[in-house]
Length: 578
Image: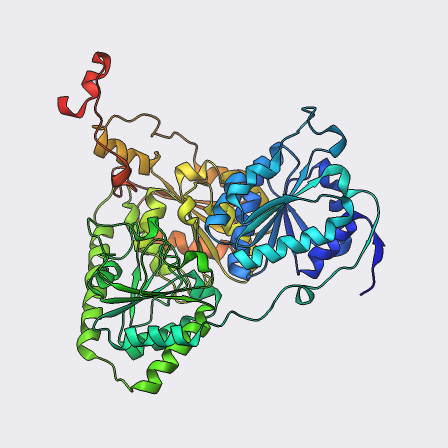
């Protein structure tokens, strides 16, 4: 393709089109208006939201579900800094996402002008790269560089554009990705694969841990074949509950906070762990239910596309850098070429025993009375009712985290969680992005009332943009996760934990959605039926009035301690005086 004359705005937009960009989400601003003016003619849809942090969460979820790169943007200064939390979330989620940051014009930099902020260093710690366009003539080139980094390092990239750099003229060619970015999948070293197969062939009690990398690589069928060959239970990594189908007989559930005891006990008893497409994160492998299940005694075979993640948290016996599907398939081929195996019925019986024990435990917990509703009961009913193709987004907080015990999925790319950045105000915004990616699927968000206070206004966006999602709001009148800390560590002294709010269901209707308030357990099935029916046309706020005394254990017992006080005025607060 020959070089042609363009403005920098045209060059940026044309390169985005070449990369397959469909959406840009943000709030309109004068700094990038010259580029924004091109979007309708280019075929890129600009989606205006009420808060820029929504834009990042939407594009994060959109990318996880669609596999495509989403773009978010804001006005220079406060608009761009509002993106920080959602970009940091996408970074820890390893989601490729382009953050366009219009910035102050170069002639006035350093004069503390209107909405001036040095934006590049703000994003350096929370992206795979943060850099600026050094000259208007480099506009398309810098967009290409951002996409290279996004795909190579799997995460967001921030591209700073001085507001005067959208104007002028340049000559450049727009390159499709195949012209400058490698498209072949990373194939692991054969000798290393043979080492992994040897360790697995000698294992007496192997367990498979499947992560998001297995989902993205399309490796779940191969993982299932490996599980059958090895008669190995399959756990899924923290908050990636869709990383193995829950209707498969080898499934034992998720590890991590409020996860499955069946999964964590399986790992604890393992002699070999085959970790497929997971970085084995610090928080996602911490002891749970007073059990250290990563004992340090297991041999770990870790497959990850990113060499930086191999052995980062847990020492590995064999580290495999490569595509999860290719690596898993080659290991299975080597094993099958060496020995035919049949299902070990004794091991299958143990897998089933663990599954049934966990199912019984969480069912009994859900059936305990609540005042007015046990939150576990609502989660249990949601999990039982939702259609198989429903995409569920989960926030952070007491109820959202307890959902990790209940939400099960039979299809990949149906669970979107905020993951280890752990920020509230994620699930509704992510639900909107998921609906963009897969409009034909029902999308349901699980949100506590604290997080909902950071989210509810985007129901207006859902109505305006025709994104009919269901928001399940659990109203217990508290920041319940933190309240549990004050129960366990601060002698029931509640500071800042209680919330007073209007009826969220009524407020949802005021904004143009449908509101449904649920006040007894018996109302739940009919309310879910009504919500899923209505969500074919309008967004739904399904408000569950739940018991605020039924609280999950603290997120981080290891990070808290009973209070010690030395000054006399605080003596009554010392745990030794209780």
